[in-house]
Image 1 (cartoon, rainbow over the protein chains, first blue to last red):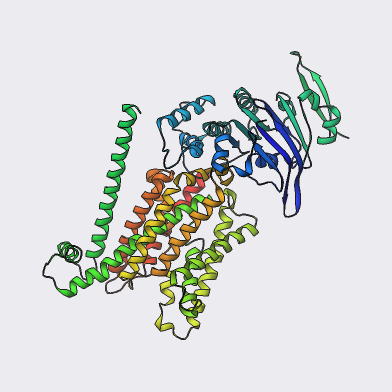
Image 2 (image 1 turned 180 degrees about the vertical axis):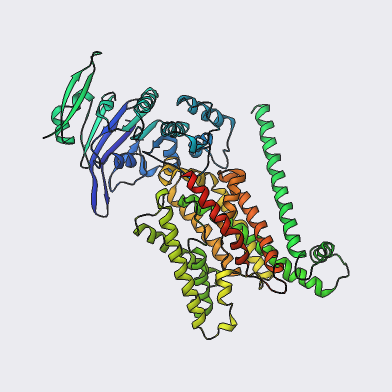
Length: 253
Length: 353
């Protein structure tokens, strides 16, 4: 197991936000996290990334307890793309991607030609080559998200965590970001809102009220009963001409 | 290693050394001007001869009064002004990065005001029984003020982050008003007000009383403080997209925040305990530096330090020569330059957001 959560819990001011979440992420898979607003998807991702410290339970990374690893070691193994993050600084696309090298650099290991190569490669992977000099503030929402992913890739992580990376993007950019993440040859855990998009993940985890209800393949997990119980809507499956399933939703009267 | 990378490394090293030498040269010119220009102007060759006598034991025959003015008054003043400018500018850069707030600066956030109150408390109320020095009192005051302002901003629903820009500035205004009032109250209440520096000194800053013992405190604090911040340049860069993003990039967030904010508070506190609170350096200089060299801290920090140092030496010259036979508080000069600069940052900021 490349990333394991064991009985994770997180409380803020005595209120329990997340309880008893155990999860095994397998090497190379794309794991989707779904659940209504406030079900704890973002909290779980931040706990997995080590940004929040669990109130109970623990996370282990490649079999090693994350609590005993330095931030630098974690940053060399795991990268996290937040839902939305912006800056007032007037930096360029290249500056933003270079930040991904932070965990690898030190006084004894200054910036080198190898880092230049890694940054170029990360930009190429998200299809942003040639945009290095562009100013951050001139980018569209989809382009900003691509740069965030490029920065995460420049960390050369084994695991990529993404918190609703397609939020607030138009449909074309939603699909291209998802396609990009799934094509990456690394393990990824991705929080998603759109259940039809979640259908394309290798496995899905369903969050509800701070617990992880179920984990499994999309066809195992996404049943009409579960959708009704968790999301409070009735659903129907529609078979598309290419044989794939689509979910259609209706509010419960 | 290939020849190309060796060649590249050598070129970078040469460039760094030439920038360093250029900076030292600029700083020396500014200090020389600071020593030379004043109510009685001292010709540059006289300044050079005095320094040669004092430092290298040369034996030029000089008027002892001129030499005294140059060595004990003007030079100490110019050196402390430079240290103060560099410290305040770098503190501004660090606070702006940590709070992700373009308007953050030690003066606006009430850190300078808290330092004044801390220093005055030690000086007049005698807390610590003479064991605590002015600087330590100022440091404690600055930390108290900063924590109070952050807590107030958090309680108001803001805190650290891009949405909280306005709230934290409002909290800073409340904090600095409170601590300035406390400073005034303590000074006015004390029976021996004539023996200590007045309210104007603590609120607006004044370099008149600066002597060599102040130089011996200001120089190491400024150099060490600026170096600590430059050492953390990559971590400071990593905060560009917020603390969570910095953590996921591999930065130990809490430790870095404690070190660099503590360093900024220390630099500000020591400078306030020597020359009082001087406003606007910490906001106008970092933005001017960003405009010149961009937002990356590897360049931004040293350039801000240099510009801050030169700016405050010139501000001090201005404070001595603008009104004949009068010395303006140096805070008046920095505000006259700084307030329009601040307005410009507000207007430019609107376009960014």
